[in-house]
Image (cartoon, rainbow, N blue to C red; front, side):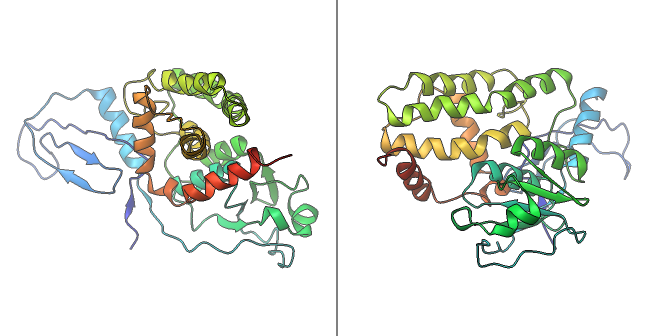
Length: 300
């Protein structure tokens, strides 16, 4: 039996006011939803209900019970591989194990608990099969999602599509202020990438430092959790694959620690490191550093 997946979510407390002993009423019981999938329950004195907060917490609790699935990852398909039976009713997510853009969609799939609903089809990008462009996705990029006899692409569009078109916990807030700020952060992802990678070939860190300072300031906007919108969301998913790569590369090659002087970013990285659904998609940091060395330091 699969364990409850609590890895994508921070900490919630549910408080119930009880006036008489009853099987259907509870005294105040804080329930800690840990990123390590442990649940601890301890009694505390009765507290007055805050109806709006209670409704929100109950909704969160009800929508965060996706199952955590440890899956055996299939081998990447290359030019010698036969194509899958495209448009046979199976929902497929075409990814590359090494691509941060594809990793976004992969993380979203995992956090929704859709490992059994959306089949992973990894593609070898260095030796990609001709049929992928001809029969699946003409732009010949990953990620791509085959669903309802259509194939959709673009990572930011796909994580939103997966969130809104499949069952599982919602990964985007209903709060209008958070939603607006979330869109601002999503629109900044390309500029973030360019600002950081500009520093890879040069000696200066001004652009990279400014980009990480932007993230540090964004993490200070909401105080209801350690993530970019307070609680874990698609925005964290959008940034995680890139910070996963930038952090070890800059530390190893440039001796630049992105966490120094940025306590919010350091806390965010620590929380993301606890996320099982993210961790299932990660690569060996040494492999990531070597890949970036070849890409950014090798002679043109």
